[in-house]
Structures are given as C-alpha cells and as structure tokens.
Image (tube, rainbow, N blue to C red):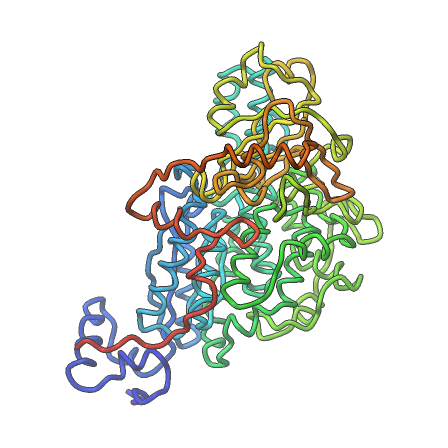
Length: 578
C-alpha cells in the first residue's frame, strides 16, 4: 500500500501511530474485516446516526447510512458508522426538548473522542437536527447534515391529512361529535403511512429547511420524501461531499456566520416555519459565537412574506413542496427580492447564490411568487415585549386568527398543563371566547424541558358552541404542526419568578401583536405586592441528568442551552492512553 501514515489528518494520530498504540488501533478495527490499506491516511468519516425504533421519524436512518457509506467509499474515504441517542418527540416523556442538550453533548464528545476527520449527521425528528448541529459546531470538524426526509402525504377519505396538524383537528372533531372513536382510530393509520418525519411544516420539516438555509445541508435535500429514491441519492452525494470538505478544511465555523443565520431566519418566515426554530437557532448561534438576539427574529422578518402554502398555516404538505421546487425555489425568490445574502459559503463549497441559480418554481400554488405571496410581509413570527414578558415572547402570526391579534380579556390561570386538561371538558368551566387561558410552569426549568403544551385544545363547551380559537399564553412551546392564537416562550418563565407567576384569575391580559406587546393590565404596586408573597417552587430533582438540566438550563430567549456549553471546544486529539 501507499504509506501515508505520516499524513497530518486528525485520524492519523490513531491509525498512523507507531509501535504498540498504532497496532492496537488498527488491529481491533480489522476484526470488522477492514484491510490494512484503509489505514493509509485517507479521510476517516464518521456517520452519526440517530436511528431508533423509539423515534419513529428516525427508524429508517440505518438505510440512509448505507447510502452515505457508498458515497464516502466512492470519494476515497473510510466510513465508520456510530449511533447517537434519538430525541423522538412522539414518545419521549416529559418532552424531547429535555434531552436536546444531552444529545448535543453526546454528539460533541463522540466526534471529539474518536479518530474522525469529518462527520455526516443523520437526523430526522424535531430535536435531533439542532442537537446534532450544536454538537458538531462545538467540535468544528467538517460536517454535513442529512435529514431523513418527510413522510408521504397522509390520505383519509379522499383528502390530504397532515401529521400533527390533523391530530388537533381530529381531536376537535371527536369532542364535538363530528367523528367517532372508530373513525378516529382508522384515521390515525392514514396519517403516518411511510418512513419519515412529519410532512407538515412542523418543527422537523422546519429544521431540515433551516439546516439547508444555513448551508449545512445539500441544496434541495430537505424536502425529498423519506421513501423517494432521491433521498438515498442525496445521502450518497453527501457521503462523497464530506470527503471533499475534509480536503478543503471546510468547517462549520466558516459556514455558520451571522449572514447565514440571517438567511435562516428569513427562510423560516417565508416557509411559515415553526416557532421552535427561534430556540434552536439561538442555541446554535451561541455555540459558534454569533450574536443573535430575540429581536433579530422580529426585525429580520418584517419585510418577508409567507411564500409556502403548507399546513398548519396553509393547505399543502411537504411532498407537494418538494415537487414544486423545494427550498431552493423559495431561496431563489427571496434572493431575487434582495431578502437573502447570496455570499455565504455552504457545504457544497459554493455560495448561496451559486446554489440557488438553477432553482425553478414549478407550482405557484404551493410556492407562491414574491409579488403574489401566500400571506403578506409581516405575517411571520412576531416577538412581543411587555410587563408580562420582559425578556420576550413569540407568536406565529400565520397560524393565528387575525381577529385575535389585538385582544383584551380576563385571565383564567392554570398552574400546569395537566391542571387545565383535568377540567377542559367540564361544561361548567368558567370561560368564554374572550377568556385568555394562561398556562404556567411549562418552561425550561419549571416542567422541566419546556414541552409542546402551549396550544392546548379549546374547552369542549366552546368547541361545541362553534368557537374555533381563543388566546392562550404560556411559558412552554408549541408543536410546529399546531395552530391558533398562542403566545409562547414567555420569558422569564414562571418557575424562576417571571411575571407569569403573578397572574391571577380575572386579571386583564392585553395582546397587541401589531404593537408587539403583551401586558398584564394590573398596577405595578399590586404586582410588587404579589411578588413579595411569591415563593419559588421546591426543587424536585437532587441528582441525575434532570438535576443537571434544571441547574444549568438557560431561558428561552437564550436558546434553552446549558450555559457551560456556549462557545466551541474544538477538536483537539485526546491523549493516547496506550
């Protein structure tokens, strides 16, 4: 073989080592059938897979990994697959968000501790994509994201149904008698009918698009359905490309610039993306030292219209979005209107402008043109301030009811989501369509983990009366598949003494989205008196990961990351213990 063991590649600190150490590293790897020639200094590529049958959205990633391996071999690299945890939103309790930071830590440490020159990140469900990006960014070795792709469109009685979004719709139909239990049971099997993550513009689809907009995923790859053969072609191409990125030393720190984050924020507005992108992008920016404040998410989207007509804000689903041109078509529209930076480099080695040049919008009902958008500019995520959320709160305007964006009503307060659910079907519940439902203790520290509980269903008595929306305010999150006039991420959260902890039944709550305000119409002196009476909740955790989480998690406006994980720690080769 050609002896390249003196190569400067990081992996050669292991496989190119002399004496006993090198013999140990190479010989144990050879029990997998690798010939001696693969240790000749070629790039060693890690394939980090979050495949798990406990995370249904990610269960097929083992097959995606095989396609990546083909590409790595084609380009002359050595692919080595390794597992990571999977934070599946559908099954994990109390919430997958509790474990996003743990997964990010695991990904970071696995990459750093092993003989890798670059890594391909295989993700799918909501938190796996940001967790992997956060971990890889902190190590700063060449990395490319491959998301597992959305499911095929759901089909029920001749209509398209969207995962997540139709869960809420079917629940309302069940409560109002428009659907029976048997029909609901049948419909749930029609909703998720193939491999892949949610095919609505929920958080999984949003974060796949955001990864592509950031430049960390190959152009067009966010939207291919999980079972489309071109999903595997994309994965194979990513395997080839990561070898080139190692040769070019193209690292996340060169890609994840301030301009790249601004592009991602504007793309999220144009696609009608999830509010969860705010938290994940803020956390990721903290890992690479990019200053990104909550107000950036408001300022940068005011001129951006919603171009994509997808559930939950619109009609179509990700399969339609893919065939209509996918994210490159959206980015081309924005770039043509001067709403994106064309210069940032991407994993292709080319710029955003170069990547989007060949893009074509095929279906103008699904991806609308900039001069005739699905929703006008200023209908994206809005950031609110006021005495109820001094550090900010967010609302997804495109999924809200226009008549409720300016509203004043009495609070009906619940100290947990469970407390609300216990009485939501009570016909005697003291609420009407003007009531503002306040749910607290659902933030990062208080729940813990900041679950997707803010878009609670309306009280059954109001649904039966034909009321379809009402204002809800919460320090938790909302599923990206959800909809309604829901104020989220109220910061500081109630559990740390935020103003939400001081609200009482009957207090007037004023929502003014055009004015970017959320306030409690109560005298400052009264609020000060209540604060004196308030006592923090007792600590529930004294050991284990959940204790670590509650002790170190930051508030939503800082991305709910751990303070000690902000910034990068590099990829220094650990000491040789042999």
